[in-house]
Length: 142
Picture 1 (cartoon, rainbow, N blue to C red):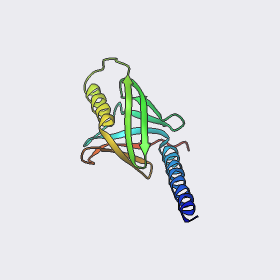
Picture 2 (picture 1 turned 30 degrees about the vertical axis):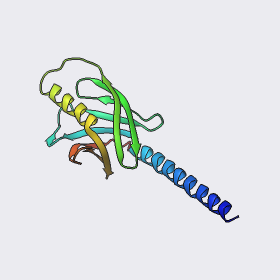
Picture 3 (picture 1 turned 90 degrees about the vertical axis):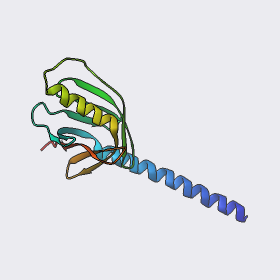
Picture 4 (picture 1 turned 90 degrees about the horizontal axis):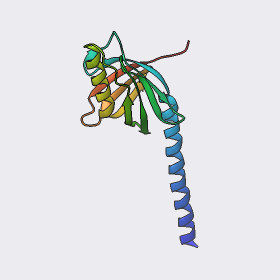
């Protein structure tokens, strides 16, 4: 009987943990969902031809514009761990420094390991050393 009670309690505990993780994941996806205008890449401010990125929570996809080309991909979110994959883009050639901004932006997405979102400012952090890769302002519909 005691073994049955322990088994029952363990089942409830692990089921609860799994459900809690799912709730946190959904909340994170909803919080991240929306469109952002990139304002900083690395340590450089981006004013003209700023890239944009949109997160779609329902299918964990991203899309946007690099300042020159359109791009798309997917993302995975686990608590504050954020990674991007399957990133593709159109291949129009643009003048400098627009191409440098595009290359730095796409490289930042590839190197992302985590994020923070405070006061509608999204910060992507490096998976290697937690350095700031980029900052973006969430676009609000007011």
